[in-house]
Length: 114
Length: 116
Image (cartoon, rainbow over all chains, first blue to last red; front, side, top):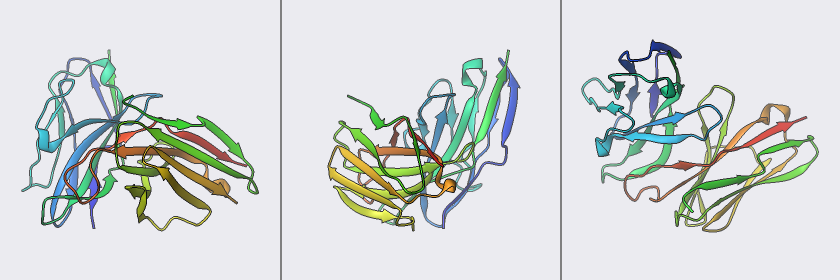
């Protein structure tokens, strides 16, 4: 079974402060991890995927297999970062391909105050 | 066209009604998905279609009936729903088929369904 845990339902920071949204996962095989973001009244959109190791809107996330974590970080938060953030996992079989099922964490609402 | 579109945006239906939700994408994606999302909760997978064939059904009640008429369209037929089925219904598509490589999903804006 695959499970994703986001321990913080709500996270508040001030503009310019560093922010870290935590994500831990449970999966017996090799997972693919993603971060999705949902801004107010907008559609759910992909923010990051661990395989590409990219930085989007200043956010980065590193997959730590030892700690089974995929925390999302940004050194200087902006007000426009306020949104709901979901960590998601897709199971990958022994051949390295995806099973096609995306499991989401419960989400963290990030509020960045001016 | 690089978006997933969904119609209608809002739908109110009675428990005896029959209605359909529509999803469309023209990105050439061959995997399409239906999710149900309650307020402040994550999306829950309902169905997965690969090459217009149903590949995953997450034990969804038969009052929800999906249909994939072609590679660009995905429908969700609704009949005899219950008030607890009220939710945001999301459609998504993916450029990679399940079981054929890493993938990411692109979501539509959703249909807000209210069952009275």
